[in-house]
Length: 108
Length: 127
Image (cartoon, rainbow over all chains, first blue to last red; front, side, top):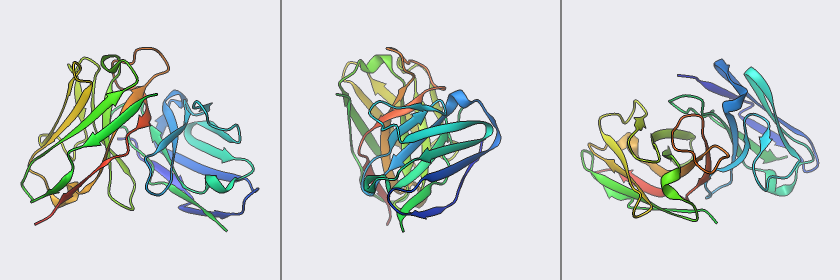
């Protein structure tokens, strides 16, 4: 089983700042099979990024994904008020399709 | 517009059973694999089970293997999760999700991301 570890657990930033969220895998993951999701309170997760760097339909270009091997990053440039939420990474290349424990992005 | 609507959650005693449903619309249901994912309130996401578009292939997390059964009725555009021998640790919000691959047909997991997700149905296992 691939274990995904996200850091930091909580990130406190102000609107307009740049957020950098990390996802580290316990073994090498094909970048083709790494996704990022956003979840707001009381809502279902929403796909942001698939294939490590491809934005999902309707996702603003301030969201970008990068990385390979065991280290992946979600960057949000110029935080908007609606971006404060919990973010999860996930690998989907093989079962079980594990998720990271999440990074909470909160308003400073 | 793709829509997924879960139902069937509720309060059940330990050792009991429950069947969840996920009604799908807005896409060719039989062309896509589907999954169930759960989330303990306030906690993270845990993949539970997946099924191929035809229903002929299924997969489970170790935590539910042998107790849960995923199935689908493509004539009714509906995904199911039959949960037996429920435990307190199964208490969670259960989401269904379409497994997407960027093509018009994504029949077989793995290698499919989850998009979109339904709003979830809450299962509480307690005496």
